[in-house]
Image (cartoon, rainbow, N blue to C red):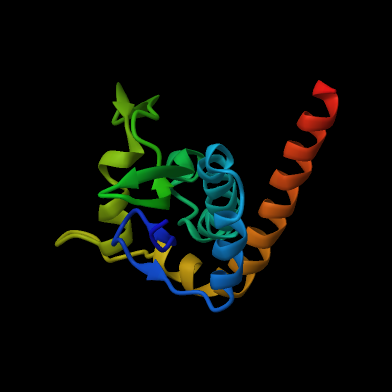
Length: 159
């Protein structure tokens, strides 16, 4: 199983965590059919503190962007990673300059993060990644424990 990382959807930064080797070794000891779902559960759990911190750091005038932040776990080029950012396809009808328009935060979240020639940067993802690094490994371990509890419960209910 390739090494895992929590990745940021905006700039694809990766968090390197100490202690993940033991977690990965434990996942690798599971039966093959359980490894993928364990991996997804662990990555999703590890991304939750980052997502929560990002929602707290979104500029206050970006309510729709805050609501659209979420977690996506996917396999790209053989490496499964969790991405935190504006969810694609999350749209809402808003009124701008007296007209109703459809706003899709995934189309402009990078502009808020990095700024434009017309507006300054208001980073929220990068500071969230930096501020929650210490919580990620603990959340991953807790997510793994919860996953194992669910598997054991499911197996016991089949008997």
